[in-house]
Length: 252
Image: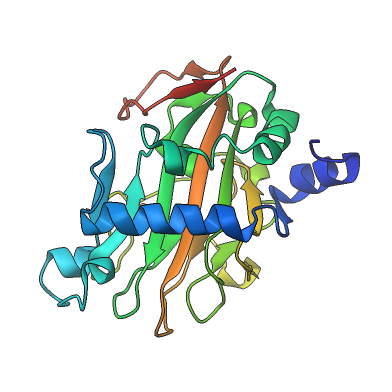
């Protein structure tokens, strides 16, 4: 079952919608166990999957307590059947299809790991900055909390309605330590942010033009989430600056 009419209207108005308890504990436990196995090297992975180190650890500024403390995220898990079960979840797919049509493909997949003891912020940005496919209305992002996400540990922050302003100018954030590939929108009033505190299994659907980001993890634990971006198979590549071709997996 897809989004209701009221939920559609909320998504169109705000650029996001938060759905509580979409994933059950067993599914989250499976994703968590697989993430830990991949990070520790206990499980092999395909050539497209990347385990990305945190910039402060990579530069030797912070000595990680464990391997897990040094990881910023896993990206491109399309070849990993355990993690990709997230993107194939029937309930999630029904919601995605109600927004962008029945024939979809994934164009980005991530497990985000926000360790304690590093900067770890993700500057305010729009996901469409990273994608060359168009139109934007035929793309949607999903983000599911694997652990509690709070203001203290760096939950998502969104700017409601910002998706109606089009693609904004992005640049490198003026921070001392920024993870690779993170771009920032500088002309956004921070007072417009809404922080999305979420419980494990809660899921947010995000328009690719919605301005959003996340803060520092100031707790003693980890903040983790799993995410996928979907596009209609009718999307076409835009002209102009060429971006890295995404790892695509079609879902009929």
